[in-house]
Image 1 (cartoon, helix red, strand yellow):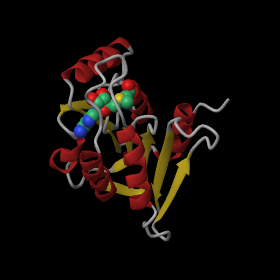
Image 2 (cartoon, rainbow, N blue to C red):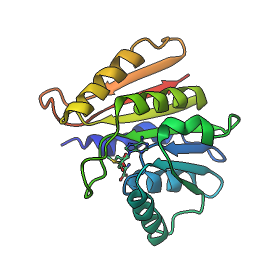
Image 3 (cartoon, rainbow, N blue to C red):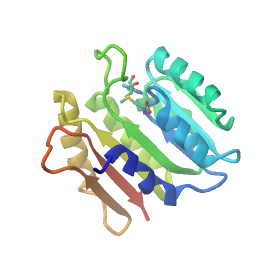
Length: 185
Ligand SMILES: C[S@@+](CC[C@H](N)C(=O)[O-])C[C@H]1O[C@@H](n2cnc3c(N)ncnc32)[C@H](O)[C@@H]1O
């Protein structure tokens, strides 16, 4: 069976360049931060955001336990503030979002449309040519469904000459996670 979250890596890999930067906008337990840290290697940089201290702790532990390259900056703040943290001249080749709540923690903190929109819009501004933005959506809960609908309306207006935006979704399982991949030419 296709594992959609595994499929992420196939979309991201061709866009990763040495000396570039990636941003994980939803750090959570650090699995995506770890994957990006490894892909970027010693010469790259990974910025990761989360609003929960627990996420930073879990991620730091994971990165240390896995001997990840020391190329990461963990930021305890909302991804809505992305433009305040990432230097304008940073060479951003990949931005990832894995929306929803922190697995294994209290489900009362989850991503919300307003901040998600600001963050995705910031990512669009920061992304370098040939970069990718990947957003995993969880339509099985009401806010997740609405985030997905909002992002569909947003991405579908992108100029085809500059962007290719795909939505990858299991069509006979409407509540399963799916993702948007926005590739910049
Ligand atoms: C599904 S989890 C991310 C999973 C993570 N990428 C991993 O590999 O484990 C979603 C995360 O988004 C975080 N989050 C919610 N709102 C946020 C915001 N405004 N800014 C940054 N992170 C946020 C939650 O705290 C949660 O840890």
